[in-house]
Length: 435
Image 1 (cartoon, rainbow, N blue to C red):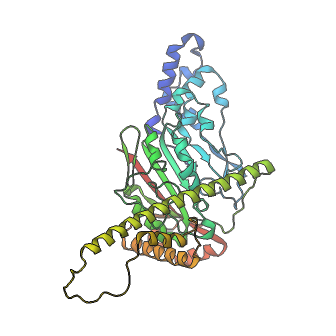
Image 2 (cartoon, rainbow, N blue to C red):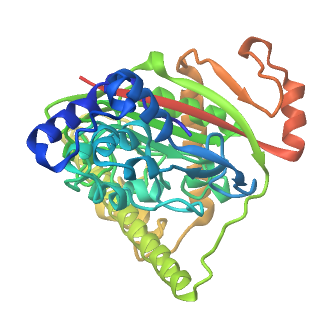
Image 3 (cartoon, one colour):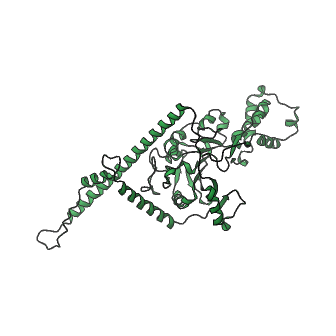
């Protein structure tokens, strides 16, 4: 389990403790005779509070290896003891900031471990005002559909005031990962991004896109995006890294998040080939999840249909302009000109109806062969463009269950041996900082 930085918050608990003690001196015993407060300086006491209130892994309760949530840093149940805060009021006033300063607030927006939560607001509503303003670190494990559909609403919650935001995509969180479809992410588009219409650097953020939702956050200093996929999709991940260098997220305090390419890291780890999904035992909950998936699929189809209609209208307008331009240069009667081939220029309405008949969801028949050829051509063009872009020099770390291997001396036979019984996952971590 990752732990936020400690140095910048070292004096923060004492500052709030002194404020509360000053405002309510009659409600707390000064504990002048206690050796803990009489003999130990505040710096030593802070070290004690930090050690006692830090979350730790319960080695007696490991997660099962073939679960979707089991990964490096999250292999055991997490525990935290609050008995220290129940001893006396002065200890509480001095130490009650450490649980939120020293530990991340982790939320699993789908496929939750037994001890996990699905909504960070569940923890935020139980905090004191000074805890909410202490520079929280919030870590969200999200599916791609959740990020594109539900993240804007969460970002608009008044309690969401993190100093550091960490979002993780697991391999099983991408759209249609089980069908091995290409991995694509675009913070400027609304809904599921299309590999054929990726945003350019100059394109604005569309309304309700997950990137535009950052405008609702104030005080965010760092955004960390962790993307995971299988090792065979390393080239597709490289294209995402190259594209991410142009993403700049606007914040609500007139700042922007800018990618620090020197902080980009890559790593690999191994896990099981087959994963097991813990479905809820309650049939009512299972039915609710099934309905939610159905609604989500219909909403996504509507977004894709609207996007396709816009593209068809744009093509039709371009063809109409081309037809008008060509008619302006027709040869004058009486002049000699080579006969034009007997092939009339198609009208814009004819083109629109032809394209509509080849696209699903527009009232026409669905030509699957044409769609497959178009998709494969777009995928090949995107991969070729990605290979031509210079990728950042990343330090590759390994977690193969063996001795750590340096990037320069990595053995391909070692990777192949690991793939026999386990899946090798490739992880890219990108970091943006407010400016």
